[in-house]
Image: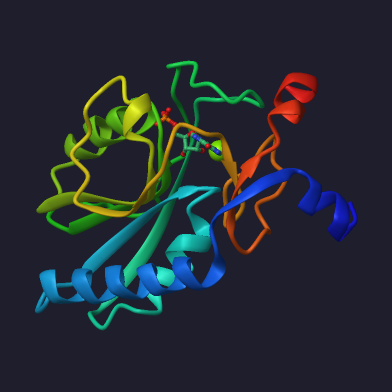
Length: 186
Ligand code: IMP
Ligand code: MG
């Protein structure tokens, strides 16, 4: 795929690279101050959260570790099926740990709501969510999100980790996917 083809999938740049990085720096400072004196375990939800998580971590000034989970709820479509499956579980035991789940985007809330119930059962000392993006208009189930990067309108977005059919994660900004592509490819 050429750079021009990549760019053509985007109708609007919603959040540019410098705005993303500035907000992530703020979140890092806020989290560092909230968890001062404690060790934090970041749990990244694969694959979309990887980009956000690695940038966020670089702004944390507290001792922290990372682990990952992979869950599937979407397939290649742009709508949540409500069916959640664990594809990869954590490597470590989170009992008694301060845990922060890092997500790229909360849409219906179904994926995170399932994940939170699953993690809660493992008895962490604390369990919070940090999501780069949230689409409040799409919420079907309430999830308590402690840290949010940006609230965005109800548009399908790509870039900075977010994919459409596994593509476009490498864009350095968050852009709106050309709706024409959803009809033809999904
Ligand atoms: P939920 O279960 O509907 O909240 O969906 C959450 C997951 O759906 C996210 O972790 C993303 O992987 C995916 N998702 C939701 N909205 C978008 C979007 O606008 N672009 C790309 N992926 C999305
Ligand atoms: Mg995804």
